[in-house]
Image 1: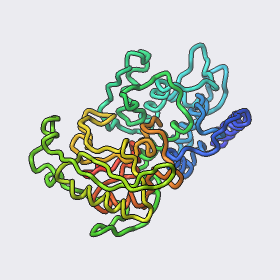
Image 2 (image 1 turned 90 degrees about the vertical axis):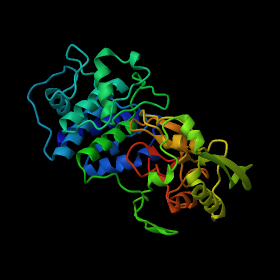
Image 3 (image 1 turned 45 degrees about the horizontal axis):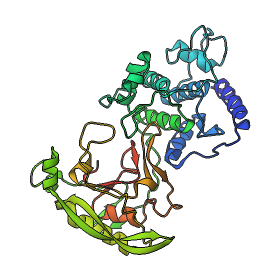
Amino acid sequence: MKKITSAFLSLILIFAASSALAAEAPASWAEQSFALLREAGVAVEEHGDYSSPITRLELCVLEAELCEAVTGVPFPDVEDEFFADTDVPAVNSAAALGLISGRGDRIFDPNGLVTREEAAKLFVNLARYIALEPEYTPDEFIDMGSVSPWAAEYVAQASAYGCLTGDYMGRFLPAERLSVEQAAVVLARLYAAAVPDAALPAMSDKIIVTGDYVYNGEYKDNDPAEVFTDGPITTKEEADAQMTEITVDIWELKDGEKVPGKMTLTVHKNIAEATRAVFADIYNGPEKFPIDKYGTYCYSFRTTATSSRLSEHATGTAIDINPEQNYCVYPDGSTVGSLYEPGENPYSITKFGDCWTAFVSHGFTWGGDAWSSPQDYMHFSYLGK
């Protein structure tokens, strides 16, 4: 593997030296993925500009290192040279194994950038090589007509593996470039799926007591039967009949100052008291955590962004807090919301802060760490979805 890593480092040092606007650290939404890959010995941590598009050679080398990390054996060396424009061993080995292909006439195009539809093929081939099975129903992207015919199967399978999903509008965006950060997130997910003991590093191992509930890394498991006492919700009419409005005290930011305010939310009637208690705790907390009442919401009858199942918003049992400042990040790195800056932006939710603790105290689960994908920092749900 030393030959592979040496060639890779030489390439990225040249790239980094030529990058005038290098992002010298990964974005917060990708930090855990970089930490996992670093522990696994995958050299993505050495890159000079994490937000830049990844090249075909860079991604190929990272996939080779991931294969070694998963299987515990060196990536096989081959004698054949498949391409006229590169002799990097990882590329020839990946070509021999059917993991990658060129761009015709023995051209690999090592410095070419990777589109999302090309990435779909690379990630699906990698998932199959490390013996993973698809876990999800393939998404039906609204822009499948713009996917190249050769890539259509791979795009569908990439969503089935959870590698690449659509944006909040249900688009795959096949021609967009894949960034280093986005590639790292996908590779970390595949590694965690292939090596069950390699869970993404936790943000904290702190144990807290919240009311009558002890949090030690696991969230409370609430019973849906205790919520839907009037029957299941499958239509908007059924949902509307089980909702109620509540008005809560909040802190607002006005001209840089925190001032008292009020906000009205539509929630499921059977969690109304729990929700009132949550906001009372936030309001009475020492942080005076501010709420953007024009973005925060609970009830919205809709499916999830990546499937046909009803969102917990459709049943009035999930709340998105300050969505613009606590974005949701999908496995491919696409986001809903503008930023997530815990500890810096006053609207961003900090784990173990007043907002997080208030919700957890009353039985809610936080989408920022309760599941591996997506990482939904705005989202609190009563039934854990």
